Length: 96
Image 1 (cartoon, rainbow, N blue to C red):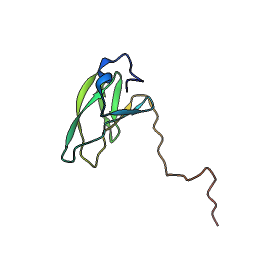
Image 2: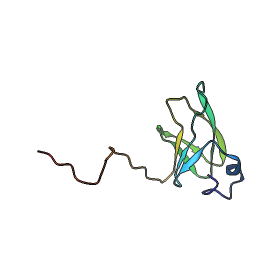
Image 3: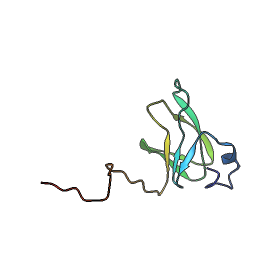
């Protein structure tokens, strides 16, 4: 996180969450009995990946729902996240 938000001193001491690119923040659950965890969101507006109606202003810590079945993921506002089926290669599928 400190690579993308070097001007934010709070990111220097975070070792239990990480960025995928510049727009996706992941905060893994590391304790089996956890139901929530504290997540630091850098500047900007962030949306919960699992519930895109839940948004948070960055620059603060939040309490996020976080059981072992729900990985806390946050997407930065104005980002595009592509989803689709897994493809093993780029060849078009042939139908007979």
